[in-house]
Length: 304
Image 1 (cartoon, rainbow, N blue to C red):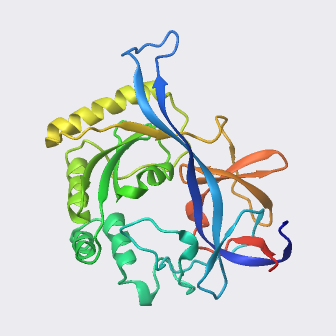
Image 2: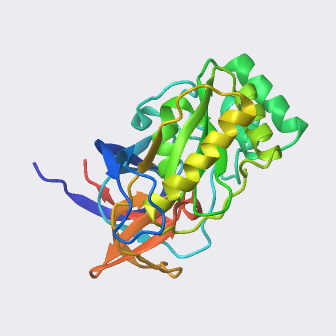
Image 3: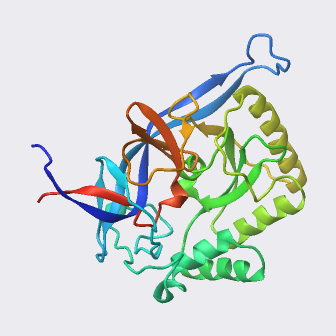
């Protein structure tokens, strides 16, 4: 049975759904003539692919999966409330969620005190108000959280927190060379305190530069291993901090292109917070954060 498409409609992009297509233990050795050679390392390696885009019709709460070509609409692009009714503490089927259709930058007035808004505030901001939001999330939500570390090519690694079941996907959303989970807890407040403590001690940074990374994996592992050992010693952590990475879908450096309005693309893949698009044999990358929860995309509506 074929899919028939009708008229073009403007939609709200809610999610770029990725799935693991390959998981393996990767053997990493120093290259020929390398200045550093500290033996062979084995790390877990994941390959992800875009399964579908989750789109929402204007004015409706339901969302649907879409896998066809997309056209970038002309600006201005409107932002919409980030709230949806999916659970925070466990994985769910995104296609069954209901999304708020109200225009808003962040969360609308109705949902600014929701569990999801508090979770977002807890992890995205600093200070006592953010920590109070973390405490409130612990009261409302039963979940498991993990503090992670990733090497993004800078002197210091980046530290962050996410829900444990989202670790691989969360790392895939950020430019990185190698990463590791370092602390697991059932309290987002304790996870946030651990993250802050690591940053205050100068062992890592909470801030990072969103850039496309091309770096040597072996050198990164050596640098990253030293960071993990320093954190374990400084904070008295005893858990096994296994290194892993999410591979880039392609090895070549794609061309960054800012002018996409009015252009039609096919979706190639996604990595590091960038969506990879293809047109006329050319691959470009575009920041996902610029189009998520906006009405930036035009698609051909599927006929029922």
